[in-house]
Length: 131
Image (cartoon, rainbow, N blue to C red; front, side, top):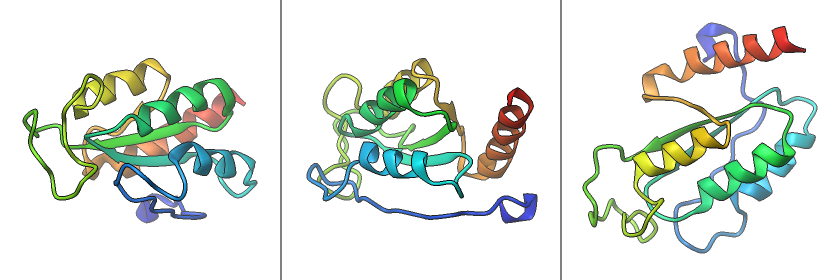
């Protein structure tokens, strides 16, 4: 993103375990109020409803665009991915199911890590044209 002239105002890691000190929604609320933030990038993974809950909140409450990448598209159902929170088990928890839920909520999806810069730049350009 730096090569495209896009900066980062703040980065937050909330972890992937089921119990966190802050949720994606908590952090999105802070970014929505931050004058130095033009868009928000959320990186999620398989397991748990946190990303979908955040996307629904963002759809109803955010003016800034929400852009997301969900890791684990190639993970088989039931496979543990390194820590307690990263297991595909229930509906809406696979990476593909999360991507679909986020798209339905209006989130811009980053298909691969290599396309982050391009997707963020395109989203910011569209947002500025609409303003």
